[in-house]
Image 1: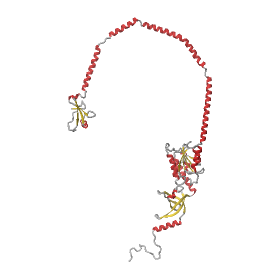
Image 2 (image 1 turned 60 degrees about the vertical axis):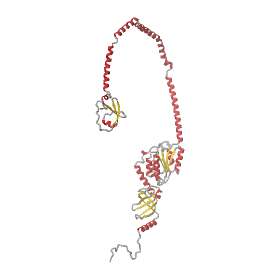
Image 3 (image 1 turned 30 degrees about the vertical axis):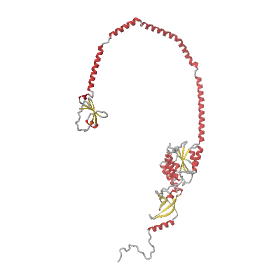
Image 4 (image 1 turned 60 degrees about the horizontal axis):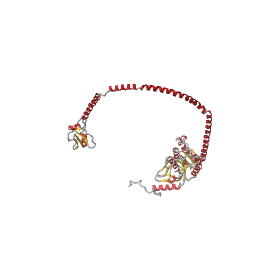
Length: 476
């Protein structure tokens, strides 16, 4: 009888000596075969899908026009890359092939990566240059003039190379200046980030801080191949230079070396030593210029004084003498001296005539007549009591009327008729309503013969007091 599982279960086949293996065994065998056969390979291709994981490992794909192979760069090898890979860059990767059993795929483990020839590197450099130029980062309108004599100079370079020694030596010979060195790596994958952060760090320093803010920044590196100088072609460095508010001199490489940092900087120096010469003038030349200007100033002042003396002498010759200037005044003085006695005599005669006229008016008979007339007017104007009594009587009636009005307006007068004035105890304010009395609680009641303190025990139970409309604050 046939089994329902016939043909479904695996059964040994006569003459078949191939035993079944697991997937892991097969994947392991493939991995060993691939690694043994391709333990060292060099692959040329275009980078696609470059990605740096948070772990530090990098993943990418190498492709040409017909095939694609995955690749991985472990963290240790990624830190030693001499350039930063980008999508579209043609490179030569050196490493070994291996398989990844979890995905049934093969990949190349890259140990070293190089740009595929100078032509590809220059093409990438030109492409990046055109992109940054289109953004205006290389425009002349962005560049600023260098300070004539900077007090502090910031230098971004390696602290152990010959570049910093050449710059310091040249500055010391020309014009000693305070120098701040920001140590950075000038080669390798980490160099671009360090240079960009150093430039931004100088730019962020406060002008009145403990460390003086540089008036000028020099970004310097010695000569080398295009691969050695590639950090100064990175976009992050170019943007940091363009965004820096401090004037920057780019001194990367020798005279024939050109980087994108040179286009973004305010000035390009062919060598680091030349950058130091651009940064400061020659102190001896400045002193000589000051001495020359001082001598010219002294000569000009002397010449001006001499010409002023000549003009003064020439002008003095044209002026009249003292005798010529004073002779008219002397003649007028003599004339006035002769006229003075005659004028005094005439004045004395007039004064005597006025005195005689006044003496005639002061005769005794005339004075007695005037006195008699004044006595007659005085007798006619004797004092009359009626003139005084009438106004006094009118003023008395007005005072009496004001007194009666004052008595009627006295706020305490109604108290004699049984009214009470209610005040709040403490501040003495007059209460005019029952609501205010209930709210106050403690009261002072003023009667005609004195005051009594009171307390509101049950507010609202007693009938409301009668309020006098003509006397606010008084209750019956």
